[in-house]
Length: 417
Image 1 (tube, rainbow, N blue to C red):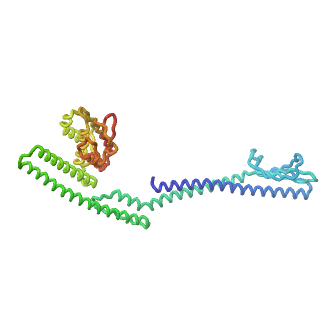
Image 2 (cartoon, rainbow, N blue to C red):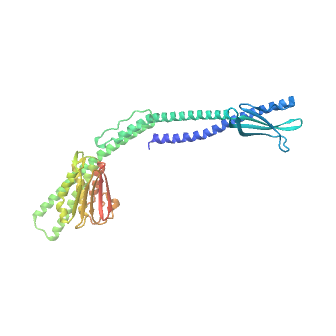
């Protein structure tokens, strides 16, 4: 979720809660004010009735107006003084329906007798007024809320524009190209500090990349020379004289160790080149054709162990380095061959979305570290870099490689996207 969206969501939720609470309070306050006004009007009418009674020694005639009614009744029991306000209903003779009303029940003494006076006023106008005020207030508040949201959206997008520009330039930054991250001019101090920090980081990364590249190149050159010298000296030594069986075994061990060191050097160098994206010969590759060619290359090796290979391939083209594609297929099939059993099987499937190689074999105890460097089973004679290289190749081109074990099958799946 983007920051602006999160901010707007919190802002809207908070505003709605405040609107509801303040709306309720506002309604209750307005309702109380108008009720008090009705009570004052009823009290004025009460005083007029008392004054009329004291002056003329008689009660005014009962009246029924459009918004007010006055009625008299005898008290029940020994009622003396009563004065109370009540919410009641008011019959509107014109509309011929009952409406909400407010009444004042009081008493008047006339010739030593107590008369109960009921004064009722209609609350329709008050209720309508409260409703109109409330609707106007809600409408204005909603309009302000919408305006606030619109302004926040426009202002926040404009305020955060330098951040997203810098972010996109960081995403497009490639250390191998040695380009600078162009600063986005802005008057906001935080974004200016972000620009400076990003460029400082980019300079540090480029410097580290130069040093790493220089180290890789120098190490590659310096290691190849001693290895070539060792191999040359061993060849010369073998041609000088005959050796005993024990000496021959020692020389064979040296040859194997030298060859292993040479392969290790080449694998580590390849990993460094892949991680730094130094192999850029992109081209469109017919993956089905490459898989079939690789199967033919491994045909004799598969036949030696009596492996049964089944293919289910569809046409699929990918854009990547042919050199790295060959290494990827070679590592996957070598792994399926090396960790298989005599008379086992290898199942190869290629669809538009996924490339899968499944092989029989023993259960491994490194399933969670399958793609780690130098991670291998105790029975393996490899260096534990093949699957790590495969993982880096997949990462380079946005593929997703996964390992699973199901029904005695080791399954490697590459999601081609």
